[in-house]
Length: 382
Ligand code: OSB
Ligand code: MG
Image (cartoon, rainbow, N blue to C red; front, side, top):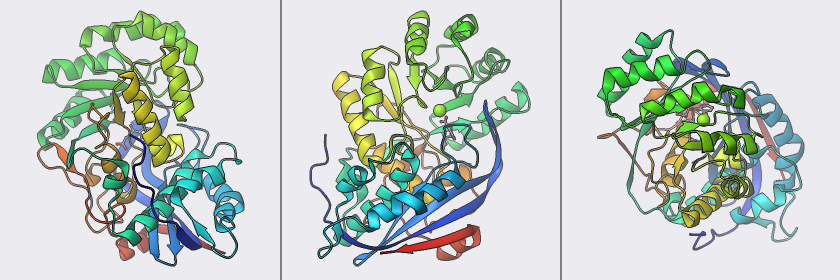
């Protein structure tokens, strides 16, 4: 469903940006690299009616997507934040959250930056109204089943150990990262150890169509899906691959907008879609992707970008929309962090995560934790 009731406009007075460095509880390895520390940008929208918070989910290096944190830091200050601060009629000077994406639209790409800015403005607007983000987006649940994304480990035995710990904690769905040479063996090890658990794999673009035989070997593991086997722009190749596999193909990196989602579905390049607000340019575009998939009868699930408590709270709300019929990568904060930047980080309860019910994103910032994690800070004023 489209947003039923728009948020009241805000008077945007300043935007504060911070680069945070947050140590990860353990290294996170994917087909594109290993991270030991999360570098991320937090946005504070300062409005006449109070502050709002958002998160720009870029990573330190452009390996998952072309966006990266220093590029985001630059484009935000040079172009995107000034465009928002200058928006609105000069006397009224107000900005509606629903207008943010249109104001930023002339600037090509940089969707993660746009998403973080939009969320901060939206959070400020909703907090001023005392209205929860979930209610605004149209949630139909008060909690969501929680899956966990498990990085590539030293060897399959270490993977089995890691997966075992997450299952003990209660996660209801396991996703393992794969890459060439660590696909069939790792998947077989997890299946052998744990039987018919809900299991899926994520290749993060590590294969090409020439690898179809190897990918078809995964069919025997009865996976929920294989996520993004091929490159971001390999839409036709994904369609060719999908026709050759029994395992459903799910797209992540390729789905950069509602238009990209519609095109991928039209070409039969995917039968499941991973929705990440950052990747598609915001939570409102994420709802549009959700809506079109729901109309097409295509299941979606909420992906993650190792969010802090800010983005994690917003993801928990997004994932409670009706079309999110598969468990997402919305795990507890302690899956990645010992110390989050919010006062009540997301926790796992009986394999589920609660949808926040407070105003806006529904979590409060821990100012000391935020300052401790901050390595750069700038404020742009009207
Ligand atoms: O491909 O889904 C991905 C993390 C960073 C970049 C890309 C991905 C991921 C994850 C982690 O899989 C998801 C999470 O935040 O738990
Ligand atoms: Mg992925």
